[in-house]
Image 1 (cartoon, rainbow, N blue to C red):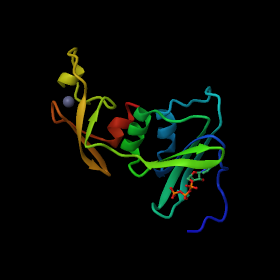
Image 2: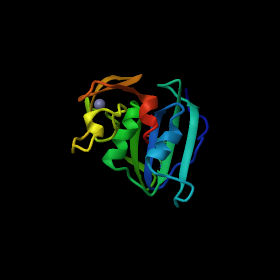
Image 3: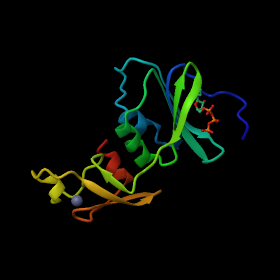
Image 4: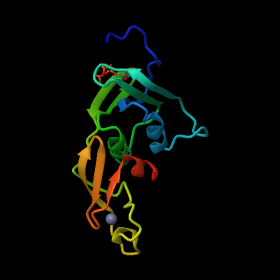
Length: 154
Ligand code: CTP
Ligand code: ZN
């Protein structure tokens, strides 16, 4: 599809998170810790027609670059998202998010009896069984979690 109009304006400096799975823009906003009390321009577009996906969401954050941990969390929800760094209106860096095969530290096991939820100093660890639909399995107790379970934690 040829873009005939620009739905949301370009930003000057900051980050554009593009090709977010349709419907997940507000989850991305939450992961970034952005609330109405956060100063700074944020542009959100949801269910925009897309060439590669049927529809996509876009989040543009002025004046901010993302931390690796934030990018990893976005990868869990939106495995096809791209992170574009913008400086002086130009895209100076574009990369796809990448979901590793093993996830450490960004999600908590949903099984209350899991050793990773005890007082032991054990970092949660999961194997990614499927990216889309997301399915991860706990290394310690084999508990399976899906996207909706992880979203509840963010
Ligand atoms: N963008 C922006 N502000 C800028 C530059 C780019 O908001 N100053 C946005 C574009 O609207 C687009 C994304 O950043 O959503 C990536 O820009 P660009 O690489 O120019 O677009 P495409 O080539 O369409 O990207 P892709 O191939 O990743 O779809
Ligand atoms: Zn577990």
